[in-house]
Length: 458
Ligand SMILES: Cc1cc2nc3c(=O)[nH]c(=O)nc-3n(C[C@H](O)[C@H](O)[C@H](O)COP(=O)(O)OP(=O)(O)OC[C@H]3O[C@@H](n4cnc5c(N)ncnc54)[C@H](O)[C@@H]3O)c2cc1C
Image 1: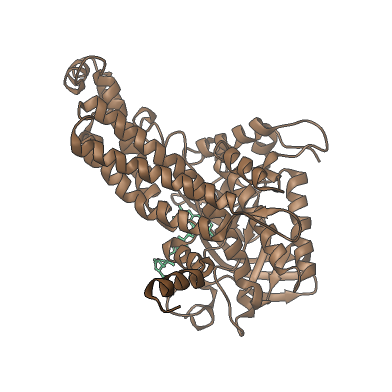
Image 2: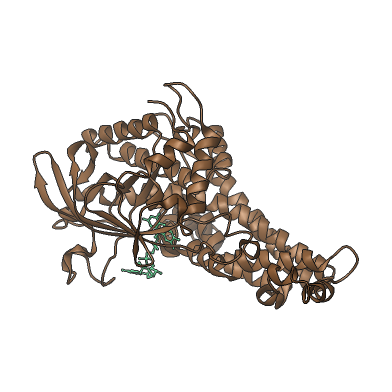
């Protein structure tokens, strides 16, 4: 098989998949306002990476065999569309899970490797479907009123299994090809039916995806960020979906139920930290530009806030660098990032992000949410007044400053901004999950020894 072109990708979406949004089933994703830009971005990604020849495959299927290769992949993924990113991260996570369970489940590890090859050779895009509906959070899967709130096996057949459940918040699922389903948490003995990991094509019978999106419906000039970068979020319903044996990676082996979530968490948090390092710099840039436009850039408290933002952006990047520099080799000879540095950096960047947004809002002023639209700026009667009163000084026109405010509102304070704030905290499994993993991998004995030495108690 060869790589897919943009046209082939667009054609591949017309495969009978069941996609819903705003109360209706959507047939032509490329034409629908909620999906069109996202489909275009993924199509651009196919175009950007396309190489001819039957043996060609995308760089996003690269497996890092050294720390330098890992750094190259992380640098590159900042220039990929989100679906290409989730494909790379998700498949690397699957391979990490395979490496971690090969000793106990060699056949499953081999199936994962074959599946990786299948995706590479067919140039497919994958998403990771982990998060279940989860019902009452205090109760384990088996104790829930409705047994389907955690995805489970409802039938075992000689040729495969049938799964039922729902996977929530799955970004870009509707415009990808493959759903990589994994358990959302550790399952205990007696919960074997919930320990299920497998790969399901998006168009498999029984799959339905309900979507939400922050894609702007109004004039795109007022939404410079979200009109360009938006992806649908998928609420995936798995209504008794058959999965053949070769696509099953776990079906009852509770010992490895958490292996997948931990492996994915690692790669997703590394990618998240890389994006937050970029976003940190972007927030610094927005704060400095609006301060300059307002004439406040030399005022003491404004400088202080921007300095704090500079520290945030730099420390986030430092955490990312440390995660790569401390990457560890697998028995297979490839590298995965440091658990400790990845989780600590992701936690720091995510938990402080809202403070950085607060600084931008504090520095920018109320026009972040009240600046007139670009359409009003273009109106013959009121436009000149908007230009006059939004201008501040020589070199800062009303239009420039208005557009800057729209960028800040869109990126931090409107639908996309709100989405970012929640996503920073929850993506990759929420802050608590990162604290748990960081603590597990931290060298507590060394810390205690230092303390005992200090106290003269060693
Ligand atoms: C934009 C976006 C994109 C996402 N993309 C994906 C994706 O592609 N694939 C995917 O699988 N998931 C994805 N997620 C899901 C994300 O991983 C979850 O939102 C996250 O793990 C939290 O789960 P939840 O939303 O069900 O909230 P909850 O589990 O209800 O958590 C809410 C809070 O309650 C706490 N809590 C819940 N249960 C317990 C408990 N038993 N004990 C102690 N504390 C508890 C949590 O720590 C958290 O603080 C995405 C989320 C967002 C917002």
